[in-house]
Amino acid sequence: MSKGDLVAVTGGTGFVGSHAVDALLAGGYRVRALVRRPESPGWLKSKDVEIVPGDVRRPESLDALVRGASAVVHVAGKTSARSEIEYMAANAGGTENVVAAVRKLAPGAHLVLVSSQAAGGPSANGEPVRAGDSPRPVSAYGRSKLAGEEAVRKAPDLAFTVLRPSAVYGPRETAIRDLFVAASKGFVPVVAGGIPRVQMAFAEDVAAAVSGALARGGRGETFFAAHPEILDYRRIAETLAGLPTRRPMLLPIPGAAVRAAGFLAGVFLGFGKGPPVFNAAKASELLQRDWICDVSEAQVALGQPFRTDFASGARRTWEWYLERGWIVDRGGKIHRTGEPNDTASNGAAHGR
Image 1 (cartoon, one colour):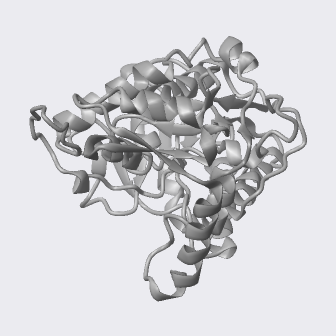
Image 2 (cartoon, one colour):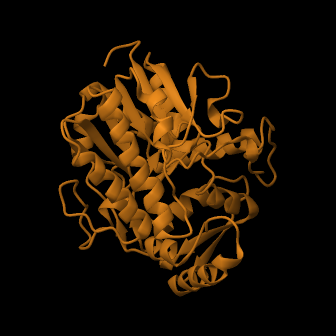
C-alpha cells in the first residue's frame, strides 16, 4: 500500500469504522465509504471521503464500492439483532457479499475484516486465547462473526487479514458509554463481584491496527485486537469512579441479577420494535469468567498499535463526552458542542 491508494470501507459512519477512516485519511490514503443513508453520513460528514450509497446485504450496491480499490476494510455488521437469522444475514451474508465483490472487481485487493473477539470465544481455562486456537463462540453474535471469518478464509486467492477486537471504547462510542453516564450520575456498577476479567481496546488503537494490517499486506492472518492489560470488573469500576469531580458510589450487581435482567429483556423482546440492546445472550457473554486473548503477535506484526491503557483511554473518553455534552460531571462545567443523536451507526462492529 502507498499513499494515494484507494481504500474502500464499509461501516465507516459508525463508531469503529469512523476511527478507521480517520486513520486511513491521516495515512494519506483515498477513502471511499459505503453509506446506507447518504443524507445522514454520521461521523463522515465534512470529511474528504467519496460516498457510495449501499448496504452489504445488497450485493448489487457493492460493485461501485470496491471497483479500483487497492484494499477493502470491512467493518459493517450487526452487534444486536432479534434473532440468529438476522445476525447471520448481516455478519455472515454481508461478508460473503463483500468477498464476492472483491473477487469480481478488485481481485488483487487486500481485504481487512474487522471481526470480533466473540468469534474466538472466551477463555476456557483462564489462559489467553490465541488466534490459532479452535474457536468456541458462546452467542449467536459470535457464531455469526465466525461465519463471516470463514467466508473470508475459504475464498480462493484472496489476500486478507482478520482482526478480532475485544470490547472497544473511546470517543463516539454509545454502548459502553452507559458506564460513563452512570459514573457521572453518582454510581458505578460492579458486576458479579468484580471477578470476571476482560481486555479493552481503545478505538484509535483498533484503527491503528487496521493501518498496520494494510502496511503489512494480506497474508491470511488472524489477530486479536486489544490492549495487553488484563482488567477485572472491579478495577474497571474503580477506574471509572475516579473520573468525576465527586467520586461516585460502587454499586454491587450480583451475577444472578444480571441473568434475571437478561431473561426479562428476552421475555419483553416481542413487544419491542428494534433489536434488543440487552438480553439473556448478552448477559451470558457479560458473565463469562475470562474474555482474555494473546495480542503479542499482533503487537509485533502490526507495529505496536495497542498503546492506550484503560486508565488513559477512559480519561480521554470521559473528557470527550464532557466536551460533547453527552455527560455532565456533577459539580463540574461542560461545553456543549454536539448531541448524542448526531451519529449514525451503520451497524459498525464494536467490542465483543
